[in-house]
Length: 372
Image (cartoon, rainbow, N blue to C red; front, side):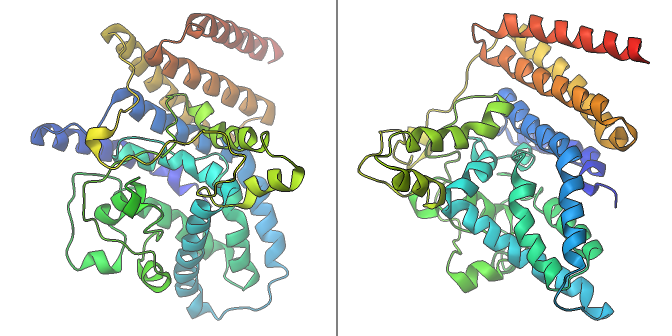
């Protein structure tokens, strides 16, 4: 089955450019270059990682399908896939806000302090793996793999358009399906909005399980513990590093293990002071926004554009490439993502890292040509 997410990349860019045009027409600022590049960098990292993980995960689902407990009639396959995927997505999404080791992965999607279509692309490299057990349950219940794959992809694509501040409330639809207004609430860190609206397409599960919330006050976006970085690779591991820092202060192994399965809201007497209180309104929020020179911004944008084309090439042609070549290309793109975002942040190590990256790239290209 083709990767529908990869095939939709041109539509993602069309949506981003349209949103930017509308925002400028309305004279509102909903994009910042560094944050947008970080969002897209996380999405690129996730899709490149999936070149390797998706094969193993698909093989696992195929193996489970041979041990399914029942077989659905043909007419029921698509309805069962639609309802089933939406239902298990709700519970994966809700648990990803309620269990620390799941939140460590899902928090990547919530790190942006803006809310625009680029945020929809901000994903964790571990998301597919974390979602695997939930899809596995559907496979064991007899839902066909083809229908699960198509519906899950369309389910993800649907959620792209709801990541925007430019569309207001949509009347009766707010009760039925996920909308930009409802999903703004989900991304907000206002105390009354935390851990609400977990539905993907339908809102029926939020109504049934008591997590539905309408948008009633201006949303503040980000996390209660800000990432304060544009680095898309650091974004992927920050949640796990935070858990390790907490566990290191535990008085014993039992308390340390609680860090894995307790809620992100859990507080123990031995915790260090690592998490600030939630921001209540935008006037109090200090967004992470290092100021880069116009030259650095132009350089970062040009370099990132080249990385987008390189990533698309790998996603579209990676299946026919040797595994070692594909892995080497992914590593080089990852390093380039770090370097590109460093141009906007200006850390002291940026120049040395860029020199190292170009030297490694030249060596890799020379080795590739020589080995051919």
